[in-house]
Amino acid sequence: MAETRAVDPAVVSALVERVRERYGSSPQDPERMCWTVVHEHHHGAMPTEYDIREVDEALYLAVLDRFR
Image 1 (cartoon, rainbow, N blue to C red):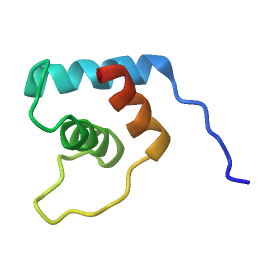
Image 2: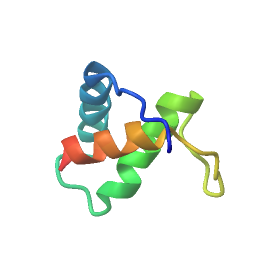
Image 3: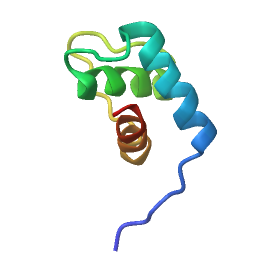
Image 4: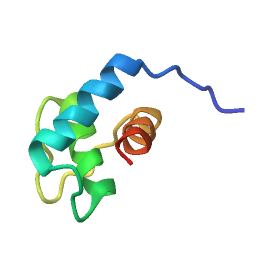
């Protein structure tokens, strides 16, 4: 069974706000925009065009869910 990690609601809120600041409240591709912000949070930099480093999936899904 996979381990479920708790996601800090304050971090989720801050990242959702970052998505809205950067891309507006209804971006064309919310999945991608949320992923780029979580990537920046996790790796310290926005992804480049071919950046495929992984991000915390639980955090990404929580940000995407809250954003929607």
